[in-house]
Amino acid sequence: MPEYQPEDFVDELRRRAAELGGRRIAIYAVGALLLFALWSTWFTVQPEETGIVQRFGAVSRTVSPGLHFKFPVGIESVRFVPTARVLKEEFGFGTAFAGTSGRTQYAGDRKAFKDVSLMLTGDLNVIDVQWIVQYRIEDPVRYLFWVREPQQTIRDVAEAVMRRVVGNRLGSDVLTVGRVAVSTEVKEEMQKILGEYETGVRLVTVELQDVTPPDPVKPAFNEVNEARQDRERTINQAQEQANREIPKARGEAARTITEADGYAVERVNRANGEAARFRAVLAEYVRAPEVTRRRLYLEAVGTVLPEAGALYVVDGDQKALLPWLRLESGQPTGPAGKGSGTAEAVKEGKQP
Image (cartoon, rainbow, N blue to C red; front, side):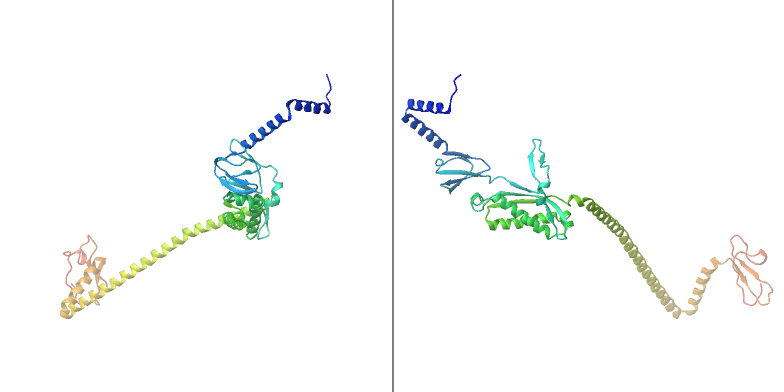
């Protein structure tokens, strides 16, 4: 088998070129260039993109999704910007890939993100903050040409603003109830700064993903949280008992006051009735004193006698008590068990 040297290969090419002729080679070269130039005169913009056509490096026009034509390469070029897509920047963690099952796989080595996620709070505590920034490109020309490295600019602005906002708050606030307020404040301030930089970016959302204390202090932090939960539970129990007992006491007080008011009204009305009755009796007494006196006496006796068990008449000459009327039921009246069963008139100072 013959051995070929590099010089032999070059000589073979020269020989074949001489056989074809310089003119034919030139025709082939020009044809290839024309085909390449023709192929580069059309381009397709995807539905979620916007095309930026540059002529000799300067921005000529922007084109919408679809098929478009331009001058060949060397005169005009195209850059595609995803203006209809929501872009995302991650801080404190990294997404390795999104699996086919829909579950997102995150980077295993989190130590590489600690420089970004570890922050100092207003009460001089250190917390680990992970968050995401989602945004859209509203002005692709400004995004590409008005700011150098726009993606890194967005990351730097997001980190600076987040550190300032977290540094102005208590660590417990950021870890618990203040997360939404932190996200809202960071979004508003970031949008203001990016607008002043004229980046052509509109923020969609800023969301805190995970806020935790650093790993070395997690056990102590968990104990503090448990103590706070116990305190909240005790406060809630006390509030529950207060909500139960206070209305009950108020109800008892209202009932007592109502009863006292009713008793007062009853006594006043009764007193008014007795006074009215006394005035009516007095008027009748003035008209007929003897009749009124007798009627009052009989009414009093009719009230007292039914309650009396026995009636005794005491005479000064009598040595012992003389039972005159036996008012118990089933017993005869009169002395020694004799009588008609009705009361008899007795004159003062005389025996029957």
